[in-house]
Amino acid sequence: MLADWILFIGLALVAVGSALGLLLSKNAVYAALNLIINFVTVAVFYLTLGAPFISLSQVTVYAGAIMVLFLFVIMLLGAERLGSGATLPWQRPLAFILGGILLFEAIYAILTRATGAGVPDRVPATYGSPATIGELLFSVYLLPFEVISILLLAAMVGAIVLTRKHDRAR
Amino acid sequence: MVPIQYYTALAVTLFILGAVGVLIRRNAIIIFMSIELMLNSANLAFVAFARVREALDGQVFVFFIMAVAAAEVAVGLALIVAIFRTKHNIDIDQMNSLQG
Image 1 (tube, rainbow over the protein chains, first blue to last red):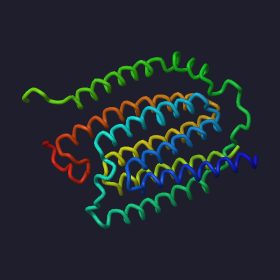
Image 2 (spheres, each protein chain N blue to C red; image 1 turned 60 degrees about the vertical axis):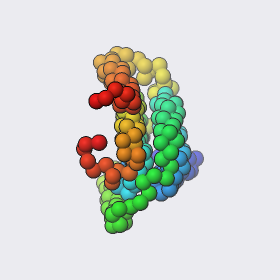
Image 3 (cartoon, chains in turn brown, cyan; image 1 turned 120 degrees about the vertical axis):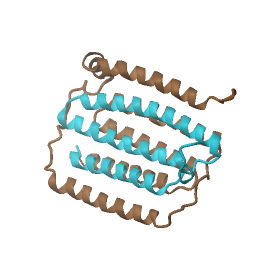
Image 4 (cartoon, chains in turn red, brown; image 1 turned 90 degrees about the horizontal axis):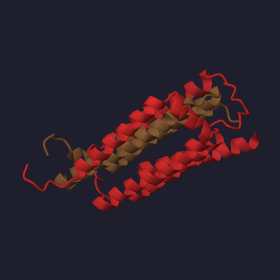
């Protein structure tokens, strides 16, 4: 029980700290590295919540593929330090104040109104395993699964079309 | 097991940090990363509630959200590259005209 809390609080501090690092770092590459730390931390949260398949998908898809793409584009554009000038001086403090108010309200509402929902301490050993998730994906969620394949194909074609150099005259 | 509302509170915290990131940063790539942060916090809430209800549907939804996020990143980064080619800048304050 105590170990659960220590793990949760430690990981939560790392997650929030790396998110703040993403917000405040001047260099886009450091922001991307902070986001990778955040994704890996959330993957460990998934493990504690009994979702091993989702956790490892998170590491491969988010921390692996997506962030490699981000770092590639940052370095391709040389965009580490671009766009640092703030044009609206009041925007940054106002954003922090509004975000703080929203955070306070949300945390207050969640921690006071919600009754302690009983989280089952034990789940079946197959809960969240690749086999059970796969069974669900290919039976109940077969149609969304196929639609996702079309979506990925469309995204691939779209990315190629958008980044293609316009050689011919328009 | 930590009660579920703490997981929800953490997800909300990460979401709001992502929203603040969208508001305070002017670099389009960092704004895009903040959007990913928000998507990810929604995923955390999905998995936490799936654990409470002992149902796997939440985890399947997270799987779909990951696929959509991957597609979104591919197209979004392609857009950023295309904008950079025409404007040589990705400061979103400069992107105020629809015509390139």
